[in-house]
View 1 (cartoon, rainbow, N blue to C red):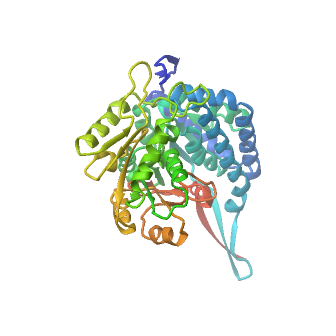
View 2 (view 1 turned 45 degrees about the vertical axis):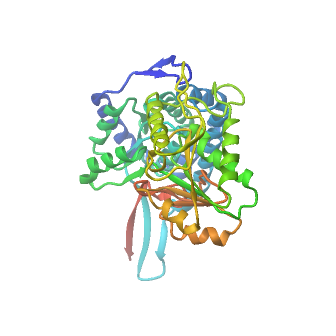
View 3 (view 1 turned 90 degrees about the horizontal axis):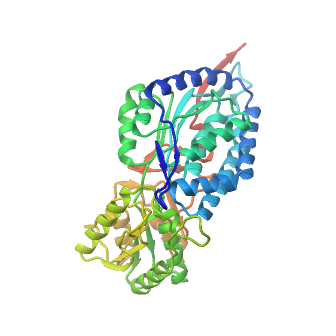
Length: 454
């Protein structure tokens, strides 16, 4: 399997793909290793993870450069991702003992009662390429702390990063038969689905998530899916600083080249401020620096996948053919690398793909609305339910909208952020289950009820 740098299309590595046979062997090894790992005291398991967190800091320069080279995000954003991963890991280190401890329900009665939390067993973690550290640690860190074995399949677009993760986990004290990397594309993922695992945890597209759920439904084991979104942002007409809001919304739309599940993917603006907003937004977009992701100051690097250029071109062409107004960008950039210009289309509507289909790139549509009610109706017009943002000077005004939005996360005067202390979950086509918070710690264990008499 060739690992290609999306900036210059050079081959930076060749990786041996796993076969169905090698994946089965890895499963048998992890199944045996997990039983021993579950007997390791919780404090010792947490200590291994603490050492891993420290190693991420020690090797952050090498890790960030590898990430930038294999998936194209600007180097400073790769560095931010590593810092964010360390922050999340520290949350798990500091909170896991509390949420995995035996829980006494009745201690004084003739029959004492308690809940004990036990590992699931061997879980499959089919991870994503856009934030391989952040979405990875959401799963394999609490899974390992909880006493599970992990078969970890990174995306083929982040395999080298996955290899770094495995190496550093081993260096931190995680046994080699407890966490094992599976290298490959869809065939490797299918092989994992065909194994009798004790849980399946996937981050990626709705289509693939739906397929995974259907494939393993008959086993009645946990299936957790962190899927896509078409996340809306509404700018009310009472915002204090319109230009500042435009710049914040732009960052939410374009960060990581727009390749984020919770990226801002469509914007609704009250008609009283619509024209000055789109003018400020377009002006800020035109100033964004596109180029070598390893160079200082680059804000937009290449897309991770070449085929996404044609996909985004089609979305833009569709919008323009239906009356959209192009304010910036609009084209794939010719030459080496999978580049696409940061693109803004005003006067968008819901007949256009750019407002209804997940884009996953540096493109955004903006629509004028006459009221909060119209904004709410359009924000809800989606099969997805990941996040939604409202910019307004009034928290009460925002809350009136939040109470009626069917999404896992809502933002007031911010967007495109994740906190380790809060659950990360989607509704409708955006997924099943939750990572992060105490819910994300207990997602990798199962309760056992104890009735004790005598």
